[in-house]
Image (tube, rainbow, N blue to C red):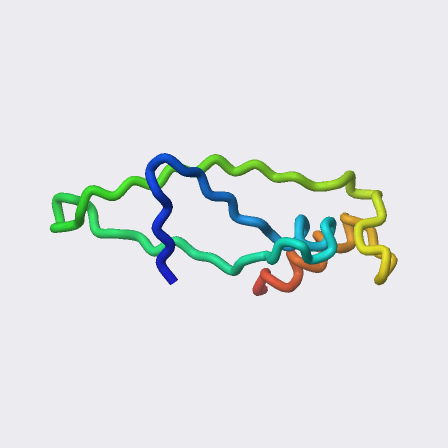
Length: 85
């Protein structure tokens, strides 16, 4: 789904860590960025500016009290799930 963000606004993408920390009050959104052809190949004037700011607890902090896992364990699981060997 293409999302149009007004020029005078800023958008935030929330991830799995924030979703867990705030107990689901915000949802983690799946996302990807579809590239465009460069202008010299007939593409339009498209700019994408990104400032990644990661907010996360310390690695040893209990992150999911229901499951009793630390943030390090959670992060390790995310990496394992998204890594192919």
